[in-house]
Length: 130
Image (cartoon, rainbow, N blue to C red; front, side):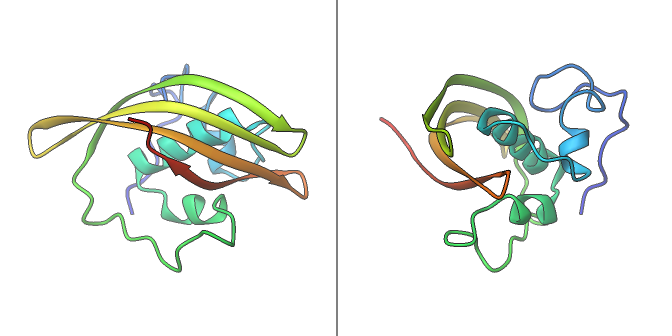
């Protein structure tokens, strides 16, 4: 597993410093809303924080294991297009994540669904608009 970056480094999600942005969530503080959770999950992918990703994935859709050790993607940036509450306990976040793989640039455009259970936001799933 990749070690988290120094807390004074820029946050992978595009927030200020890692310490002021996603580090608290990666250390156990619950994300206050679905957008913050989505940003912290993007950063967790960039930092290869598999336990965090599994812990913030809804039990009904979470894979048994997640192995990012062979993931060669270099995450380049995140743009949140939309964050909308569907109800007090559910939300969607639309985003575009840019990454490079084998020297080629790619974009991941997803509309993700989130639910809040016991005060904690969890990722359910997403779809990929055309």
